[in-house]
Length: 220
Image (cartoon, rainbow, N blue to C red):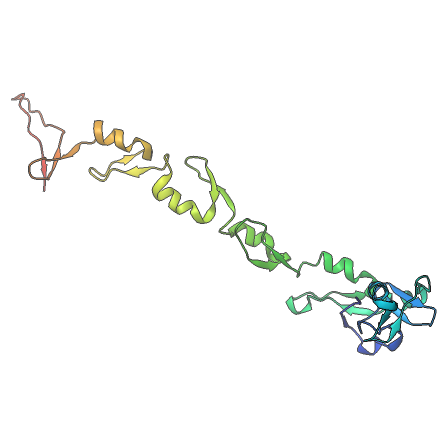
């Protein structure tokens, strides 16, 4: 298969550098004994057809009757082409012999996010920016050190992180860690629900200098 490229000068495309099988600029040119120039890949495809003949392009390839065409290679290597990613902003143009190596590392090529679960396609030049905010990147909970994907962090904090600081729903006191909440409610919370009227009763008793009696505050 030849080079499907955009030429800097469209007139550089000639019959002598175009493969008759794929109709593209020759890639690794070969020449048959009959003087027909073919891409190496196209020649290999024709070889395995019945009789070594392609009815579409009317070319016959006989085993051992072809050779690398160095003159054609020099010709196609010198053709000036544009990057296939020009529409995404790449301004590169250069000799065809450098095309493959440029495209392989072009910053404007589309790449897949490597994070499991993310199906975003971004430009290579934007990949690092995407990775820094990808919802599927691995993050570490700053409270319990558990590793999880970023999109689950908020839910982890709100429901399952044992070390996340929470407020007591009764007294409003901030409990250091979620896993200590039950201990707080049973042993140190200053409010308790009255079994008779369901009001919150303060368990902190006020002692006066004049009496040892104490009474609870009621919160209605």
